[in-house]
Length: 137
Image 1 (cartoon, helix red, strand yellow):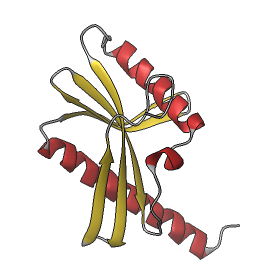
Image 2 (image 1 turned 135 degrees about the vertical axis):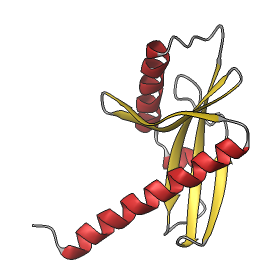
Image 3 (image 1 turned 90 degrees about the horizontal axis):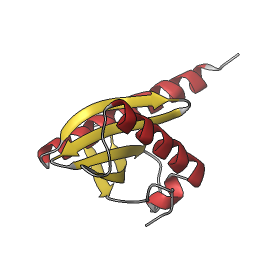
Image 4 (image 1 turned 30 degrees about the vertical axis):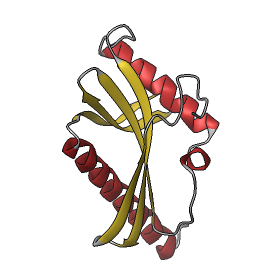
């Protein structure tokens, strides 16, 4: 049986995660991107946000933290997670008839640091973090 603390911790993480995704969505929109979808899932993989600007399709993994240290995005999203994101992105592209001839695909990581929810936070966007094989760039 779960204690009340574990339920509250889980609920708090979900609230912070949603908050981080919302901040990230607003950031990309302010840069001229259109959000194509949120929380796209396929066979155990999930992409938090998928955005487009002209011929660029961006697959965005959002990491929101309240307790943090300076961590590089490559440490946050391990190879297994990157491969799941890539597999899910390929399925999204297949469903929407996006191909490499017409579009450039990019994998970004957004780190959201919460200092004092919801007033004080910092957004760091790391563009083109890894390639289509999961190799860190």
